[in-house]
Image 1: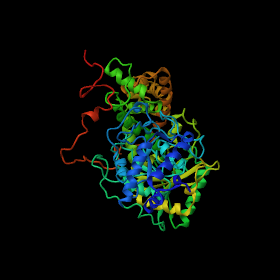
Image 2: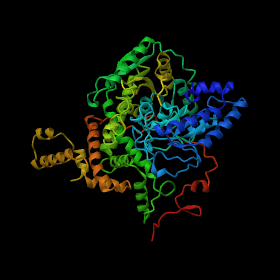
Image 3: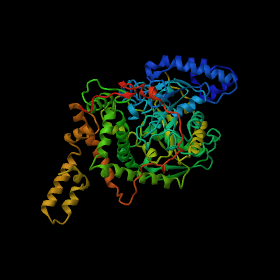
Image 4: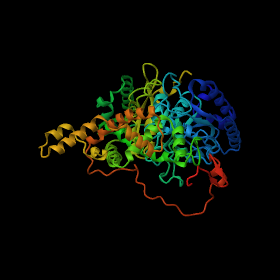
Length: 490
Length: 134
């Protein structure tokens, strides 16, 4: 086994035992990045000097006996996380020259543990997309088959795990942007409950939906990373002040008596969505059998407003985006047009030159939904339907501890396949979007492969702040299967 | 006829036709609005207006592309009208967020040089922009 194949907990044990140094592990990761990056394109910026300096500091800390679980562990961040002194683009030309003056709280927390930063990962521009094709810095390819998309928007964060370019990464999830690429790349990805992780220093897309979460090789690492970034932050007034449990301690391997809901809308009532891909269906059937064998109980449930989630999301998310992205005006940071004659002209031209097509499209939709005469018909209507979607989950969780669904209706699609049809692209997020609208937590766990060898993930949805339960269920599944041990041949 | 009206008056064609006809003009007007609304959710002029509100300058190709794509997306989101939501409260946040107050204490600020480090143009301790007032 190569150093770059290790999990966090495996490398941590080796570091503590003195079998390997962080500098050695980091050097191996940097070499791996260099070797596979031309084929995959996970990174926007690689930071070798920073990484080696971090690693040297980590080795000193380990030698002094003060190591935390992430000390010396090489990680990478979606380029949406502000990193002081290191360019942060959010995949956009409008931020091509932006060097943040401060860091995101989530990165600060990892850094305080002594984590090593390998670089900043590719993503859809401003996290708007499901395929990582909208980045201004080129596409990312799926390490399992480079003709396919890695998913999005945290496509670089997932591809870097599958290609073993980082031990773990952070992503963000507004409508499925951690879970869908995790599913498509065969890694573990968790979207925590809204408010569980600080978003300070994370570039905003849709503020009532955005949440930070980890992408990892296995469930134990996912629990480690979540525990490291979770918790209240006085700098983010939407972060919640509830205690952070020891997520790894909850991984007992037992799901005996766990009540898991199967929402019929995700499996059967699929006429408006073109149905589930047969390979995805097979993977779900097998997962259900596995859980039955482990002693879990299944309960048929209904989430009756599922079919309205995508429409609701694309009104709320675009409306919030149009407001959040008003800050990119060429005045204080980012791209400024050199063609402008007046202030308004400068703002308009800077934005028009700086934003890509998907971002413009969403700003346009959101501006329309918020504009005079349409506000009630579109934006307020969507907020009301959001209430109905939340109530669906509240009712379901009166009967079950967790909900099992596919992450996506199909495995990864081909590069270029949905670029010209934004609505089809939006509909590929049908199974992940309701969770963001409800504000609860969910994760993707490797659950099989398609006939053509592309990974398939299952989604476990938990109650608000029920991360422990879904992590335990995911861990038990992982113990009983070998999907997570397979490696992309790259 | 304002788009605002057509949006709130949207009804299926057969519902209008089935209704007792009290005023032909009203029905005709509604029918006209419905057909206009049903064929095209958004016009090129509206796309231009929205772009101006969003401070975006669209090329001719972008404009015509957006008319078609926004029309398809707005047509799709119309499915929300199937749901009666008269008695439903809107949700702005998934968790109840009240004003999150913190103690009003002095703390170091980021400082002028750091704040201006990314400025595309500056003069002394200010951001510099094209002239606003002649």
